[in-house]
Image (cartoon, rainbow, N blue to C red; front, side, top):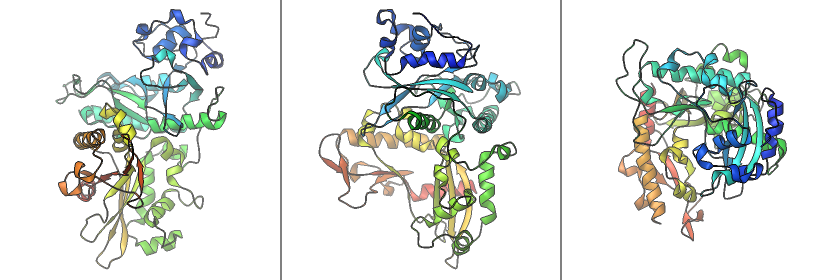
Length: 467
């Protein structure tokens, strides 16, 4: 091919990359020159080699070093309603548990490689050779300064855990935008690494890579859709931000994202619901009244009706805010529900780490806790961020397998699922409007909607361990 672009010019590279839009790699280059084995089956490597003329290598610098630009090919998936969404997190670069301990964020491979990225999005289809998959969107993305400040905090949190010899406890739920995702299959040999004092960590850790979380990638895709329209094959842009925000750059230079939010809630601790409602102007009859209180405090009532879950930071991070009401004895008044089980999707999930439930349970949670006192007044008790521990995720995997097997065997009924009476951490039960609230079964016909739940006792233990 004639690689007709300037390797030192981002915009020249972008213009050249548009030749992929609406085409497969096979259609964009001479089909007979493509050898899928050269790229080890990875579309990104094939695009580098055959479309851009870049030899595959293991260098830690950006793919276009003269332009300071990294190429990151990212898959989309099509939902049953034909909507396109992000298929997976964007893996950026491997974590070296020993070497990375001494590298500050601004000199790290993740910063040097991924601050400026060209992201061609393609539509993934099962059983289709990668060079026959079609490219849909093409985005030139510069990570905004504010996002980099949050990612720096994420990076430092990951490195701190490694320095403590706790790399085996890393979780994608530890951080906000930048994750430490697992690499390799379960059962692969774990890695021993050296600690700052020169000793070897006592517990080895699974291989991990720095990655941009699925939720962050969704914000980039959402920008692409809004800029060019659904199905457009001519969307390319350089952007510097996304949506309304909770926190500004000057605040992030002084304190961490999580501390800032918790510090907003703390002055309201021990106030009764009635006092908070009056102070904040909350409708005391609203169904989601406890969430509305937390929402008003976190958004600082900047805009009436502002929704913290739709803020820039929550959208990009996927942080889940959950309000919990405790009875006088400290027991949660309700179990905690999540989304309904997608029976079609769970049948397609072969790997726990790529499952929807893994994504849900490894999110970062912000729990805002209210408790009834001796006089039956409900008071704001505390708030904290939480990530599901590694040992609980192992139990969650068994929970996922139980659900998957029940769906596979066409036994979608309570007697085949975990129930709260089994005294595990999780259970399954309906969350539909009524018994007539049903959905399609992968085996034909209709079945009742069931939902993922945390048990009462599990929630109680989470709160007790956070105190």
